[in-house]
Image 1: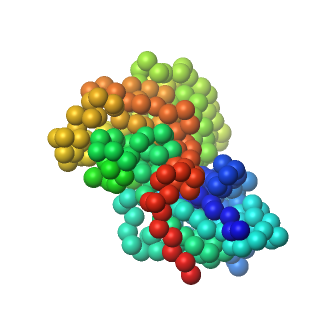
Image 2 (image 1 turned 135 degrees about the horizontal axis):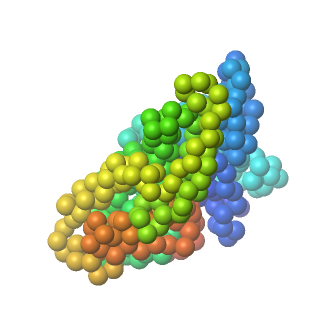
Image 3 (image 1 turned 90 degrees about the vertical axis):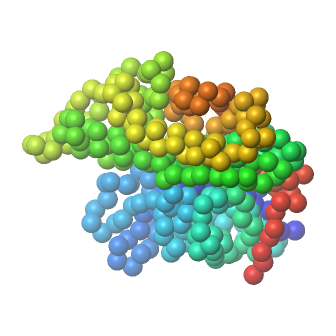
Length: 333
């Protein structure tokens, strides 16, 4: 029988789940190709480690942007290789797949995701809105008349959705997430210290010392980069406090997304939020103090989940396995 897969095609990471097995693939969403000819030289974590370090003949980059496909040539080829890796050629039948998609994706962007998955050898494809998948993966019940809100803070976007009776009541998104914070950190060091760093170093600083609340500050660390004045290597020490101040505009953008969603929330559902709180998912949810800062800003309890990065993938798995299967509508080619 054909295998059933769930694909979380994120801006920074790809996760694939299989019905009956759970998560079977987790890898960085990055690719390295030859500029002349376009041959794929590396994918995943290996390609991510090459970003910012390649010679002129090789291009290493992320082929996804803001949760949708930015390179319609590289993504299908990457998915094809991953499918060959996780599904041996001896497997009977082509697989079916359910793929997460941002609520704000256009019809063209949705079609691009479908085309990429079909090109990878999948027989039938269904698209699932990521806030719904994230809510299911977080263990929220969507089949009743009560309301719940999910804030999915990923690498490319922050999407805030009010959910009720198995659907999206209203949703707002903003292209701000982990990648935007990385860029802000790099810009801050360039302006403040005349120090040029790459995206991987900026991501390291975010994960190592950056915070979203004073009570979550984690001290300081040293960072090395290139001095913009001399061109030589330079080392400076940065602290949680100064990085927190540097990213405050990005945090305000996240707050605005949530506030816009709340302002359009029906009064009958708003009361549920004050009773049960708002659920925070996505990789950026791991930024220390983000839940506390959001709670203080909104005056509502923020609920954290054990593995926020995997919520969308686990939601897709539960949609394949459980009572939410009726929400899946496959398209076959």
